[in-house]
Length: 446
Image 1 (cartoon, rainbow, N blue to C red):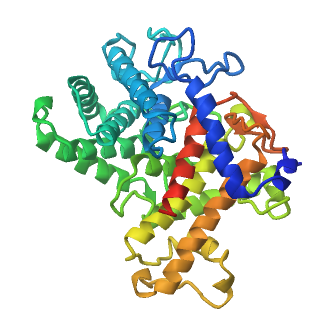
Image 2 (spheres, rainbow, N blue to C red):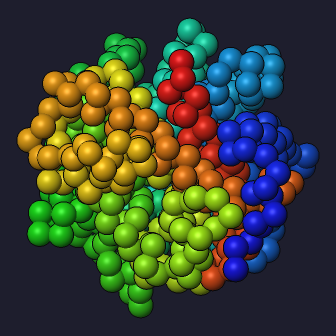
């Protein structure tokens, strides 16, 4: 049973996406500095039990703030609101950097009064400081201004990354301790961005940044499983999830690529290894979720619902709004990248992913993709693929629409059998992930 088939008949997908984007800003904004919290707090969700997400996560808050910075000027309420919201976030971030915790800057979450959460938890999580670096640098670009406070935040986080990038930590799902593709990739992206915007006042040797970047790039290449044709999410596993997660094919890889947002070919949306990983993930989830049995017979066409990994058990192991949005964004961003850089080789690795996009064009029955072809020399094929990738992204957005209640509220997950929302309500990251995908789609028409 599909959760909300009735809303499929009311408006076009494009109108729904616009409406959902407008709606999403409200609950997302309400989760920023809500009443009873310190200014700058971004709660993961208003949910306080089953599960209790009423905390400020370093990772989630950086991603949410970065999404707000990405929105077109004027889209995230008025500019003064955005300026004040970021100012509150930056001031609170500095306070957290100075707060004594059990694991220093690797502490993943804090109480909403700004005090350290010292209860049992998966710690350290070393992706947070890297994501905060990317968000702070994004703010400097957006507002065309820096401050002593922002410089101090950057210096502190960059020093932490340099000291700890080879130290095992817990993954973004807070389940497994080891060396993670996601963490390493956002760390490398943060160090690259730091090098690009280097400030001598940080008192950090430029060579230290470059050395760490090279080391992380080499480590990331080790995650490639040529025998399996996907990026392994975790290497050198230390502990965690002992009774489950026996597969290492994980959507965290795709999230890492999107959050790092590199403009190079390696570890970006253009990397054929990334597309091979995405294609395998889609195939896995299509097979294991009952809700995907209706993929081709729903009230309108949709792509498969996407989860975290195949043997997930959290809340029953369901598709997530975050991960399904990520697959929409992956398609949109690749289409946008091909528009900017037309030189792109078809390989055995990216062929399955690209075939899905080309199949959505009416000319697909007479045009065949072949390995060894550079799209730069085939403008008609390039255009068809760009259009097909946008259409594929839309199918993942249509999947989200199918499981989003008519009023627009997004939880953390939707149930794998009947598609109704489950787990934490109004998950801030769910809205941010949807908005990020929608912004990527809008960029295609600019």
